[in-house]
Length: 98
Image 1: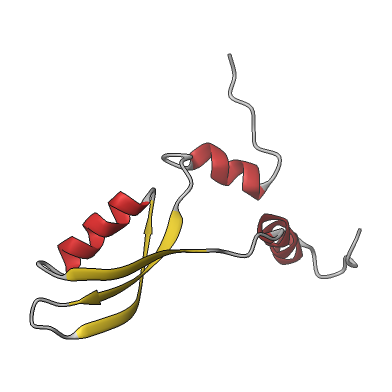
Image 2: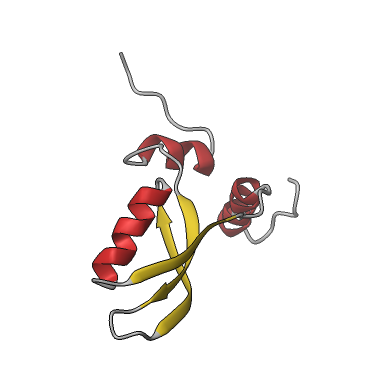
């Protein structure tokens, strides 16, 4: 069965992504092992447990004081990316929308 070509950049990205599990951003406030507070650490991970493991790898023996899931604005970024690529690929004599 022949492989079909993707119709958009978004579809291509979805087809070539190694894993389609969505990543979530987590914000942390920690205290390092020497007692120094660190605010606004951001980690991207599949779930909170994975994010906490990443923080523990970066800051061994730290104390996690706060962990929060960071909400990202859901927009039509993929659609905007398609528009940008079409603008780049457009011939100099073409007008937008042609």
